Amino acid sequence: MARETYINAALTLALVLVPLWAWSTGQAYILTLCTKVAILALAGVGLNIALGLGGLVSFGHAAFFGIGGYAMGILASHAQIMDPIAEWPFLIEGTKSMPVIWLVAMLASAFAALLIGALSLRTSGVYFIMITLAFGQMLYYFTIGWPAYGGEDGLSIYVRNSFPGLNTLVPAQFLILAYVILGLALLFSARLARAPFGLALTAARQNADRVETVGITPFKLRLVAFVISGAITGLAGALFADLNRFISPTMFSWHTSGEIMIFVILGGVGRLYGPVAGAALFILLEHLLGGISDYWLIYVGALLLGVVLFARGGLIGTLAGREVAHG
Amino acid sequence: MTFLLFAEQLLNGLQFGIMLFLMAAGLTLVFGVMGLINLAHGSLYMIGAFAAATVAGLTGSFLLALAASLAAAAVAGAVIEMTVIRRLYKRDHLDQVLATFALILILSEGTRWVFGSFPLYLDVPSYLSGPVTLPGGIQYPLYRLTIIVAGLIVAAGLFALIARTRIGIQIRAGEADREMIAALGVDISKLYTLVFALGAALAGLAGAMVGAIQSVQVGMGEPVLILAFVVIVIGGIGSIKGALVGSLLVGVTDTMGGVLLPRMFGLFMDASAATTVGASLSSMLIYILMAAVLIVRPSGLYGSA
Image (cartoon, rainbow over all chains, first blue to last red; front, side, top):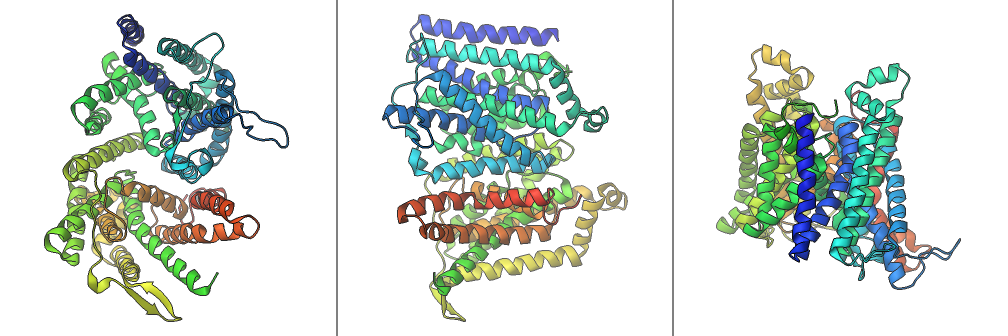
């Protein structure tokens, strides 16, 4: 455990020092990259609750990421043109307020996770992987064919949404906002793992029959975990949309699902800081290799293949040695 | 809606379904025999199409192009199986998903590197172009009809291979109890390579045949791969018969939905709104079909357990 703690501390330090250095030398681009790391890590923290704790291999988390993004896009675009979303049965106005958008994004993706989870969790193993993938694709094709919010071309939001007391258009302030949310999510996920719910979920992953014998229904545990997981990934989607001030069906594509999964795996499945390490590594690779070659994804593929075949604990697992994640 | 249009769309759905079957058969075989989920199956479809387009460009012969697609995809499949996939059989499904996802990244970007981002074109040969008139006065493109017939012949061949030949017996035995057939002296790793290459060749053939209707480009295999997943979830993973029934259901539902739904909504909506709603709903139709099948039968129509 000790070595993992040191690694986590070093990672935290790096994530604080790099932006400080970038801020002091006026490199706004690096600040934006760090914000991107934090937001993508947040999506990974969400997936890690289903994947790491619950053992639910969801290949459709892009669905929640996208729903979060579209929640932001729909609310902000209506506020932008001052056109209410609905006038009947009661008036619903768009909004540019981040807290409201986040709440809507989390509720909407939690609801979607409830529906998708209730259907997908009837199955397990390969079926579960394929079905979550298929539902993600369903929403992808739906947004492509839905012209109201840009269809295939996506939709631009001209001004970043507002947060009380902050100027979110200043990169450093938006970065702090993303860091705080990521910190809270990590805290929540650490508490969840140690709470009775998290322990029961871990037990259900290891041996569902035993959990059932002591009177807990694994299905309910998993469904709740899936909903929480979806809500956090949805929040990340809303933030990601705000970072880019742009939404498009790509948020729903299965490459997005694969990438969120790569963050978790590159870092180390079931480890608290795994998604943070993975997202940081992914963005670092994109930044470094993207400059060398247009075909940088080949190297990411080769690295991922290497991690899966030879270094099964991911980055943190390899550095921290043979400790079992999450007991 | 006229009978002619209906019949034509039904045939289109059938053609789409047959192509899906060629993809789904390989996926479901590999899962049934080796217990492996292979996301890179779409890349083999792409490799088949690229090989066909290249050979057709060099020689001008469509038949040689088809042979090249079979050979290239089978060789690529065998190489991938021996270098990567073999190490994954004993791993859990998460590792399999990730490793084969990594393979997609490598194969797609590698193809982009070699061939560039622009699509290639594979022409329908002159002896297969143009329409034919079917009984009932239906005008239908000869090439699509050829695809249906060729696909049905391949499907029949596959069923015969599995039901009647020695290899087929070994494949079925491998599904039932892999340790036992290894103990009986069957070289199981050779059998696995063979099954994987067979699935790959079918995917490559599908890629080449569809490549002549659409364009040949990087990433062309991915939408088809996901539809093939839907097919085998509906049909039941590991069942070839399920793959056939699922493919035809998905092919016909998707094609007919795209034509019928906008018309249905047109009955009580104005035309442009009906087209929009109909198009978005029809893109979701097969997933709704999948959800419905899962509610009734969680392990698919022909799935065991």
